[in-house]
Image (tube, rainbow, N blue to C red):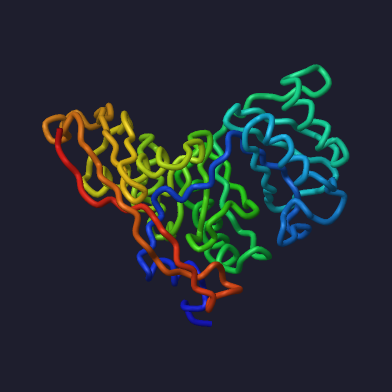
Length: 313
């Protein structure tokens, strides 16, 4: 099978930008469940996984803000009891019976933390990588390879982070896709040979710009602006924390933002290079890419924001 039989390869060849393509939700919920039970739609999983959770998620999202529920897996996992991780609040419910999953979530989102179900704080960083092959074969091929390699590097470096396989995270044409929590930074097209650079950036709390899709906690133009600015900073070799200060929609196809730059603590030597502020101008452009590996010939025309120009302030 050639590389052209994978939607992620075709998307990359079309130069479709990944900045600003991160999945958005106000709340992310990850539930442990053996991968062998996952279906194309993860929340229709087999075994004793509760029915109707997808419907509940949609209804509760109208009340609590968008909720995204995903299944996660690691080797040797049993479906007898599950763990539930909730972000950005960083809570974990442990030893939950499958029949209690919906009740735990209903109680949490309706009443908050109660004595009925008590969570514990999540104290270890977690990286979730999509390996959902039943949803798209790109995720099985490129996602699984990334899981294996990053676990090797994390173990070798003795980094305190958990690596999980996840169900569909959105945007399989950008496979491998992953989300790094608690920061909520989403990445795509992260090649295994880039892992040392990614982990080095992560260690100093810097975005790995070349593969950055955006923050899952930012919406629409705010996410697009922040992600493109991060890409720009990475390309310039700037180790800084950009702050998007102002977003202005000019026309239906154009917008701009103002970004302020704060030098990272470990990059004092770059203080005279990084400007205080810059203006970034964006424009909508069209890109052709397939909807997925099961529809490679069904090319879709997508309108994506690209960085058109910058101006020093």
